[in-house]
Length: 235
Image 1 (cartoon, helix red, strand yellow):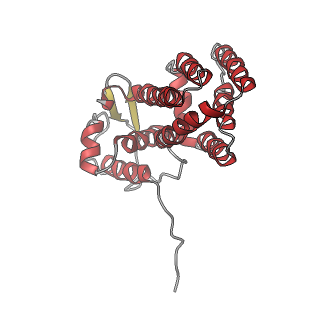
Image 2: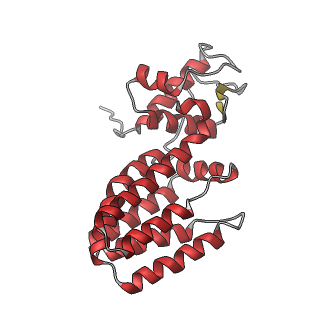
């Protein structure tokens, strides 16, 4: 008896495989505009973030072209197999943003009650570093990571610190997420300095509710900014 290893395939990969199959068999022809994000999500029974991540994977593979403000189109690339073989490209950027919304919002509320004066000062210094980093074309977002880690440290909870570190490492180790972040940067999408400034203000006021709301607003804005890459497909 010969058994094969069972692998848990990411949902966006299953969606990407199905769409690549439609392109390969001619159901979707080169140059055709794909159905809207909303229609695809409804027909496939998945979330819109999953559709976006499938599109990123297909764009990286050269199967589709995302034209911001216009839509998503099949390219003229020929797919030889019935379905394009897509390898695991890591956790998608929208999945990471969803879990960051849950974890970092509550972490920020907890930090508001425990943060030290020294950590407030460190956040302000890092905010200035972030502003300088964003002026460079090769900005790495290290200051952004440092900013969020200081908040995690302010919770005085080692489990929170480990989780926040892991989420940022997950993003940086994911081929899908890093490729997408590079495309966003090329389109002029950067971390919001104003959002970060509001987070610092809420923490300085030692206001947990305001801190939670400021972090939620920041990550919601980051998600909305990332969705602009898809143009009308996000409608």
